[in-house]
Image (cartoon, rainbow, N blue to C red; front, side, top):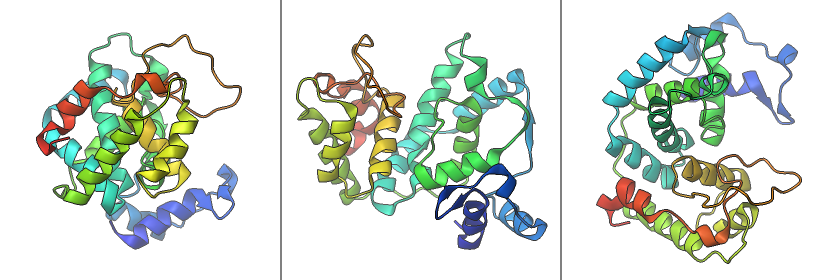
Length: 247
């Protein structure tokens, strides 16, 4: 990833104080063209619902499960959070294509959509909008341009330790409590642990088994909101995606 282009993308949306207001998002034409040439920024994007669904179908047919698995595992040690995101997008595209009633708002098609903010979120946090079809499209389209490395032993050990931590959850343990305990298994920030759990939730690995549980008064969970400790993790899904690595 080109460091200068990444810096241009980041300073367009983010400062030391957090998100920049829309009126403060300034970028020179020279900088934009440079980041665009390096594949990190894009022109406004317009696509219809039918075009998006067709593109998602073509894309998912060209992305192998192994690439997605390798990208996720490798990200645990190489810190390519954009690679980590692809597992969620891969699963969600299958979800979209199998559900003719998938919410149009979540699909995200329309006129002059901003792919740049989506790519910023993808690189900084491993994505935020994993239920969005247009995000999934961008995420996987960029992934297949990468040279994904084979996961190493460190990656495999880290993920096994993550699963071990999940499996040791107590009855009633909340997502927030698990997020804190995951610091024992992967030495990263709270935000990174949060999005790691959401990706596993989107992939039906950290899967709630009951959706009638009480929501906390204030939270920012999506896919794992109703997960509790007794749900552990979906061993069949782990075997499906990571079995070849003995996980």
